[in-house]
Length: 306
Ligand code: RI2
Image 1 (cartoon, rainbow, N blue to C red):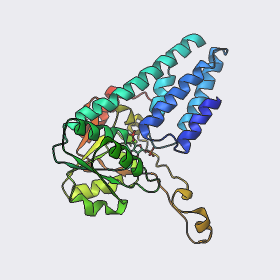
Image 2 (cartoon, helix red, strand yellow; image 1 turned 180 degrees about the horizontal axis):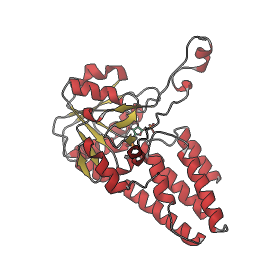
Image 3 (tube, rainbow, N blue to C red; image 1 turned 90 degrees about the horizontal axis):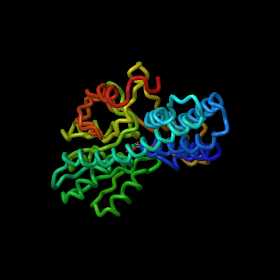
Image 4 (cartoon, protein in one colour; image 1 turned 90 degrees about the vertical axis):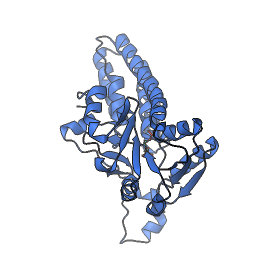
């Protein structure tokens, strides 16, 4: 359980971050934990797996990739522990393999929408969005990127380093320069933490501002998302919880103690309604956001997480 606690801690503190990465890390942690439980009877085993699953899922509330990964990993129909471990290990291996392959497929499908000469704006640091950008570049397209800083944690710095190392010309902007800069951009490509059944995107705080500015400037917005980032629970009317993070991410705590009348609000994600999104690129194809229900039904099944 120590190793699993350690992974949970790293997800909480965002040492492991990105909706896809936390899902893969959680699945692997649950797999490795299951392997340590072979001396238990099946009821004890199931109880331990449930507890461990909750520990992992409780780390971050917004990215549905996390509960989806845990649910897909932990389910088994075995009546003895050895078979249960075997099923969980297989589930995890298949989830992780599919997640890796999905990134490649998203890259190939999404790159079709990128043309020679395009300037692409992206936000935060999304492996799925970067897969599209890098694939287009690999195809020899002459592209460049505008990357937002993405306050407060500045994941944009991870993006610019990655793009720099890949040789892709990149411009860093502060988040408040999005609207002004949109005029020079051809399209927006972002990732996803969750997508609800009505096609709304929940992604890093500030994403909805990119989408608003893009719509005003008549630029397309493409969302890159593996199918496991769609939320089955929204089918039951559930709202995706927006994670509120610590004030220390925004302001030095010492400065804050000098300001007794000031409090800090630090929502980590925002919601972009479907009407601001032109296309969702998944490993199963590119769809308009109105088809989110179909993705949930076909690729996740409505029994997930319910
Ligand atoms: P990939 C990240 O969340 C960002 O919001 C990013 O757009 C999203 O996950 C998807 O990232 P955070 O963990 O799965 O930085 O595409 O809060 O890498």
